[in-house]
Image (cartoon, rainbow, N blue to C red; front, side, top):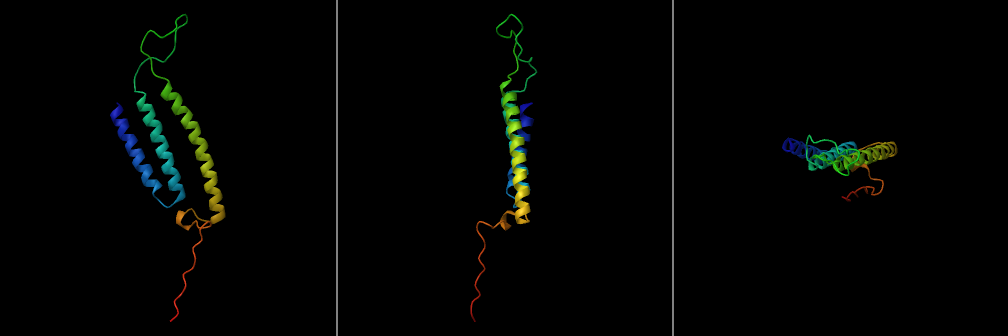
Amino acid sequence: MEAPLAVVVGILIATGVYLMLARHLLHYLFGLVLISNAANLAIFIAGRLTRASPPLVPKGQEAPQIIVANPLPQALILTAIVIGFGLLAFALALIAQAYRELGTLDVDSMRIAEPVKPKRKKAP
């Protein structure tokens, strides 16, 4: 079961890198989101997919008697999802402000910090 999900992780990362190579700022952000989701899925796969029981300890015992699922990857992914949503909201706000200020989302056209100097014409 882990092998097909590993292929999905690879496809998500490849698509994310492809989108991040585009000059459009929203494509870059969507690529970043895809890579973030691929990392979450990779962490989930690293915890091993199993149909084991939930990690509940019966009353009166100190440890479960049977094999239980590992809750650590799920806790890490839940934290990463919350942080990812915060990052996405902040990045969308920055992109919206950049569009209002510059009127474009093309990365090559955003030249406030390094304006392009006009080329001199050669005298005939």
